[in-house]
Image (cartoon, rainbow, N blue to C red; front, side, top):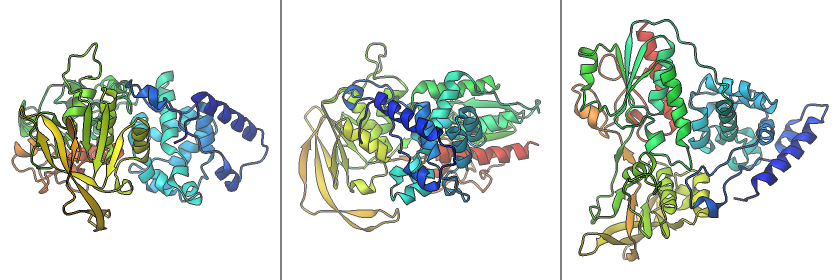
Length: 495
């Protein structure tokens, strides 16, 4: 990634836009493709290593307009087909290109309730932008129209200007809906159901709402004030929020319907059960799941050493096992907590890494060291039971597996030792098992995901589910799509 200063990027965009606005004839497709793809201004890597402020600084108005002008306004809109919630992408980009940023945000919000969130954390390069005609013409998804960055800009502008319009709430119906969890799927359900005039109560196990948006995604990628603003919008609509309330423990799910008078229940408890490798030494002191590590840092602000008293390990040499976004988040958090060395250990190559391209680039810029075609075989500890090293194996790639990625094959006899002070295991999550285990008749897959029909309904009458508890660990926008489908079914039933 190049690193022109934000000031330079702003000046160049302003000059290019001024030239285009002087034209008296419409831009041709060829001329649109020739417009400079707008680089996202970011904090300098050397500076951001020592703070938790957002890395990406956002577009200027001129950059947002220029990037939007690159859209060809294709009649078949292939980008929309790549969007899980079918946002009118050409429509909002045209509004933004014309300088109507409020109109652009309004178009997005017809289908997506969380544009400021999705614009930051959704993998556009494998969804809408993967299908972009501009990217295909330039033979690189990196050169596609930066749909997510424009989405982020118009959403931020609306929030910062205070111009957001509260949704209309229909007259009270007397019906009551319980929403379990407060992550993206649950936020979507709560808003859509409340709009129809039904009473909505959200139950959150933690002391703060927001789900994975709060405990899983670091501040430097998604500022928590943005998530809180969305929660505030829900409570402003009349949604009731109960924190420190664990369904399955504090109250059983069926009691919500049979005793508490709820007419429908939505389960959106996510995928919060960390996976481990089941290798020797995983119980040593200094070995963490990425969930625990990130929850301490994000939700409990362990990075704020002056004002928070949350304990968190601050070792010198950290190894992170995994190659997804969670692994990158854990590694980059360890950098900010003062680790001298942070190592990513991944058994495939960078091509197969599921992490976003931008996340990989940012991690490298911040000094994270990548060890590819390697994996931990066992963890080694000292006499006090603290981890001191990894025994690793080298790998090579074989034939593609069920995921379509080439299968890693260990190289026999390639064991070697890597000294380390802490290990963070970030190899994925399973669905939260508490509600299925405490609810008779709730059908799940062998992996623990709740089974739903095409409407989002579970095997229990009046109980619906969506998001990661159904899909397994997925994206924010996919969870929102699940929530929107379930909400429509709940509203139809309660008519």
